[in-house]
Image (tube, rainbow, N blue to C red; front, side, top):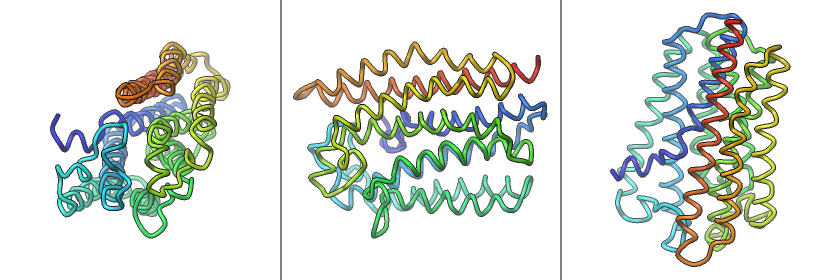
Length: 299
């Protein structure tokens, strides 16, 4: 695998695609014609920020000694010596620049206030692992992911189409945000031992792997069930297509349980399989929900 593709962590990219798809689809459900260029720009912003946060995490955790040879998941390119810290800093700056350019264009097309949202998202990207007090080390990573990759990304994607904040987008943002959090939680529960040893006090470290794992399962189930109020607010059964995620959800929970019980050299691959399954659940729910919302707007 190309080292930059590896550093971008493609398994996490559904966290960027799903909120844009669902937010844009809520505009269609509300009867607002979708402006393709605005949707495309919103997707570029989300993807660039997701890549940026992955680059930042790789850089800052590598410099802090958090990522070591003992970690179970995919290797981190800075810690592995594949990319020099200075090069990763430039790549991080480039990803943020792409997000800023697309976000600036959206602000010009829609509302200048979107620039403030973009600044907040950029600071959140850097603050996850960087700075004197990274918020991931204070147990706040999950909350910030819910806010930015759930509420802000979904409601914002709807706003750039409709020019207003609607209840439907806000309700749809909740399951989207929970799934983004679940994706993060797989990484954090996998890394709980090495994070604790390095002094990185994530929520997984604070709660302990067992309780944190139970919380992960509850969030996944809740995300699927929260498709129901989306259909209620949309006044249409079509958003219930998001319930198709129940099938991959069952596989995901089974994979996560298997990873938690795995031992020795089997642990790393087992957690990677759990991460991939979580991403599939997120993608199926998000695309099902988005497709249902678009269909609801046409019926």
